[in-house]
Image (cartoon, rainbow, N blue to C red):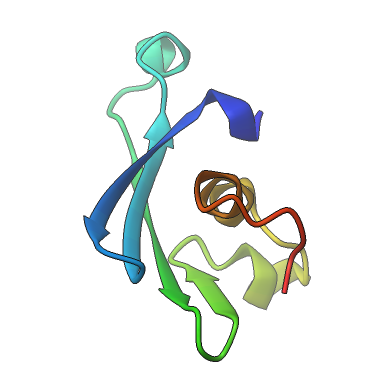
Length: 75
């Protein structure tokens, strides 16, 4: 699923917006954009969806940003 998400860099190496491809979002009422905040010095990634904080699971939005940044391993 993460491969079907687009990444848009809002602020270089710091802030990214992740959203569904147009084809996937066709059935959605509106296209949701998830903000992922990156701190490369602290190796910290946070997403506004809060999945990690709620469930202890890294969300697809963070995985997509990791792929976009060519980081093969989750810090």
